[in-house]
Image (cartoon, rainbow, N blue to C red; front, side):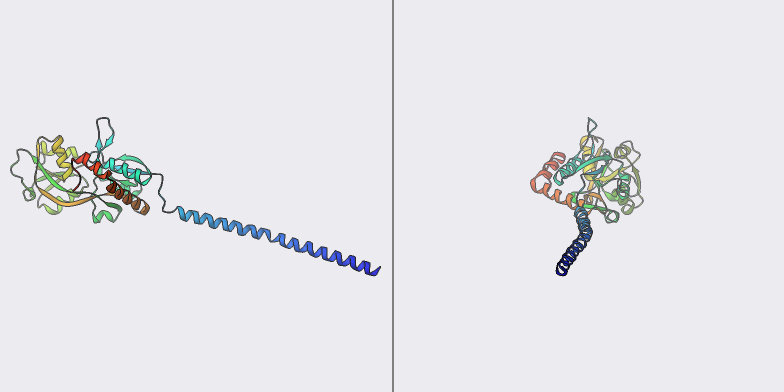
Length: 280
């Protein structure tokens, strides 16, 4: 009888011990769950890190309102030109969409600085001063400055003849700075719209226009029968696509796309369409 009671007690003891053991194991399950949550948080962090540097689906691109043949409105009111076609080709190659906006040239750099725009393409010369506040793509067009005067003007034949003259140009452009820094006594008349600058020369309120050579040549070739180009090509400079600072992944994507367009011949096709020949 005593042995029987003893065996019963031992059985109860073992059963109780197993219950306590299982309960203890069960008590550890929340910790295991916490570990799983922590692991999940870790994965989320990794996903966030992986997403950094990825391109956005859409970027806001700003361009100028009237810089033929780079950007201008056609007879249907649609924006077209070398820059417009190029940025569309770059966006397609890089895999993002663009929302195109336009503004006066002098509002482009401030708009990039404030984040109003992501990208700008508008015949923007690459300068060290601008590099302090915006980023650039690799150069995509080699330009320079040209002088335009009235067809009957025989007094101005080069840069030295602009000393003491009134010279029309565009507000906020590198040509405006060039006039102030390099032509003694010259008075720069700066206009928001390029057609106003050309009109100033045609009506005699300015002695000459000094501006980007491709634009001066295109204007005279297409609409400027009263003007002619004189002198040499001054201050050779490159155009670059401007990008808001801090978007390194976008700079890389644009440069890669631009390189591919040069490689596959698309760049040459666009260039020839607007300038008549392939780039040298």
